[in-house]
Amino acid sequence: MCDVRRANSLHRAGAPQGARSRLLALLMALAMTPAVTAAQGNAPAGSAPVTTPAAAPTAGPTAGPTSALPAALSPFEASYSWYWRGMRVAVSTMSLQHRDDDIWVYSSSTSPRGIGRLYPMRPKLLSVMRLLPHGLVEPLNFSATGSGADHDASVMFDWTADRAIGVYEGTRVDLPISPGVQDDLSVQIAMLAQLLQGRTPDMAMELNHNAVRKYEYTRDGSARLDTSLGAVQTIIYLAQHPGSPRITRFWCAPSLGYVPMQVQQTRLKSVEWTLKIRTLKRGADEHPPPPAP
Figure 1 (tube, rainbow, N blue to C red):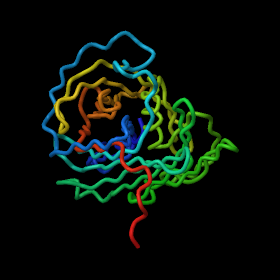
Figure 2 (cartoon, rainbow, N blue to C red; figure 1 turned 120 degrees about the vertical axis):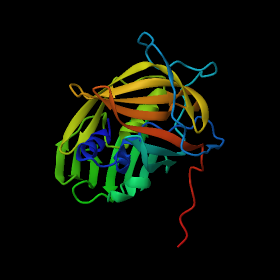
Figure 3 (cartoon, rainbow, N blue to C red; figure 1 turned 60 degrees about the vertical axis):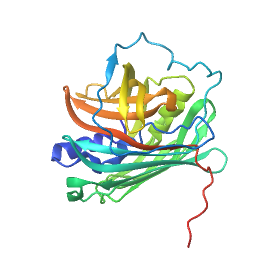
Figure 4 (cartoon, rainbow, N blue to C red; figure 1 turned 90 degrees about the vertical axis):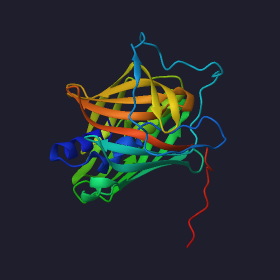
């Protein structure tokens, strides 16, 4: 899902996956309390999850003992370490900010580490979106810079005309869209918003050049992970494009508003890359002051 496909192209070329930060915009918005929670540490030690079999299908994630009403999105900032062939090659930072009324801005940036410094891409992504009732999300503008003309993007979503217009990885975009179509970043917030509403989406539709690509979601058991935030109980969600040999799994923590603690992609049971959480801040100021001149 999401930038997974671009990470795949880098993998086939033998380049570090960390350069592809789009993937992880990945699900991690959420701050379920207004207070700021911060957890920091070094890159987490290798996880040793104990996985339990997947439960019978349900309408959504298991609610906590005090969850009477759906939780709402709130601002957050999270950082993740990218591991490629067992080596840490980059750190990605994601930030969700609430602007006026129903407008939200989600951004990601990537800094190389180790051999990742040899790779020229320094992607910066930005998505402006509208949060609708019942946890629905409409992307408005998406941009990607820092990776060269063949990988950059600038797309506007016109929901009055139901069209997406712009340029995506060197391809001109001009196609009809329907409710539910997302960009590389908004797709993650759309999934989070649904989880916070107590529902697990069964499908995602994401812009892919001048077309729309579909991904299927399923719940895939649970596991307790050792992370930089401590030991965390997680629910595992699986995403896969129909017919693709690649599977992406997200270890989401209900106690932390379903923020992913780990993301990993496999191809025919072989691990291609892994993403692990480093730091997490939730409930940040919704209206940060403008930068100094």
